[in-house]
Length: 247
Length: 271
Image 1 (cartoon, each protein chain N blue to C red):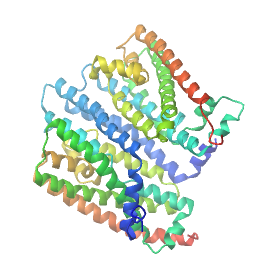
Image 2: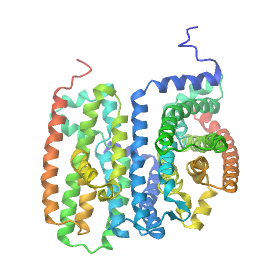
Image 3: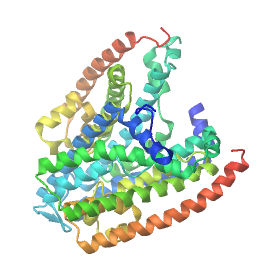
Image 4: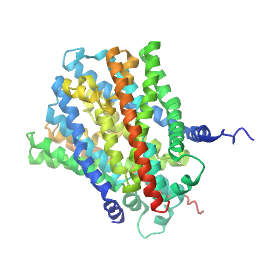
């Protein structure tokens, strides 16, 4: 709440974030529009299908830093403010989720969501398709958020910087921005299992557009839960081995 | 004086100090080089698929053979441009009140910021952009012509000056608005979308491409890359350089005026 009050207090900032919120989905719209106006587009993907995928990626790109800001976490670890949460009567994992988000990303979340809705309205979607898409997207977002935290935890001791995590995040989001099928089978496997961005972007888009059915939904559910378990164990292990700067 | 602590004098010393301090963040530099080498691959694959699906080797005059060079070189340039840190530093100085101490020093604050940004950008260019450039040239077997390389260097210098002055102007606004992150984000968005990073400017519909070529955003990434790759005609390059010079002059005037006004505002506030 404090972060929100602080954000709203700077009225000019708030105004420009509104402007930013208004124009940022135009990037996806412009990109897809230009691609489809000068070429045959991406094989197997219509204008609105690609627009939907772009909107989902944009939403994820704002949602993950909103929940977990690696720079904030590294700052807390470096300056010892993280220790405060270890003394509180809730788990350090909850503290990780609650304290290191970037409020300003709310604009990106809302406007990309509107873009997703706009694209979905132009696609023939079913209620079950929307439900499956929403479930897989939520699980995928949790996975990507946990992955970010796990990378910060794993790399902090060696590098003392959030830069590695941020560069990693931006790089795999770049790959997730387009249908994984264009990269071939091996890359699709990599972006599903090793760097599971596909669960938050590609598979939700495939489910909504009807390119994938129940079997992919079940695969996404099981795959997401397994990856979540692995990431949780990594984060929990790193939190246990965390030694406060105070000794 | 010890050679490790003697950074020269004045603004050159400040630039050198920043150069040395940034060089120490080796992991960050390596992470950014790796990203610069991997991330554009996604865009290159996408455009390759688009060209293949359209059964053509040229879209709006842009040949598919130039995709690899174009997107990798653009990504390499995006590691250093636009020079945005100046506005963040000024916002931080004004917010924290540190600007008062800076103004009391026997140094010119805008020149101090310039030296800082120059050191910062120079190290990024040498250690991030150049290695990516060289690797891409080796992988693609691409050797730019010497004339193109010389003109490219001029465009890089102009790109630095133009974007530095633009963001210095934005930094001055912090004296009024305190928090300028929203403005900076909007400008960065415009640079990314309309600067040719996602779509080469020539691929845009002609009327949009013509407008973008006259704006500062289109000259920072697109112009240097098409100059180096030899894709652009000399008349296009000449026009582009003139556009850069004009915008640099405009931003210089705006910055000088805005700095005078905002400095008075800072003084009135007790700076």
